[in-house]
Image 1 (cartoon, one colour):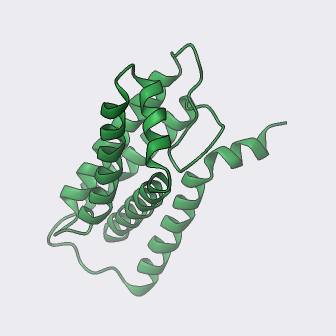
Image 2: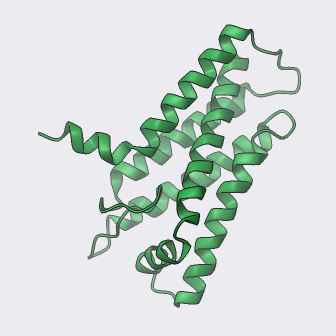
Length: 169
């Protein structure tokens, strides 16, 4: 069963970070403006940081499949934790900053996004704990379940703001 948890975490990390990176690649300068609104830095530095985030997400999405998965899951957990910190910091800003986690959005970056990223980090830690070189290949049913659950996790992660809007009274 632990082999399925590792596979789930790997699929979830890959899916979330690929979707996030690709959505940012559609408008890197716009993402750079968001970075600049989060921290008072020159626009060229903000654009460089925006590219760094995109590259880190793409790197993470690939590295989770390297070896036994531990390096990538560790990187995914650290990246998710760092992004959670940025989201929580955004709640203290005097002017709301739109969430650009998965492309253009009008929803303000805030606690909901921080909690989402901490949940992702916790799932990466769970996958990391169960990963190992001596891990058996999961049975076909376990593989299907892990991939399907990760796909649902990616969809919920990407559309969290839309789901929260639907749930509002």
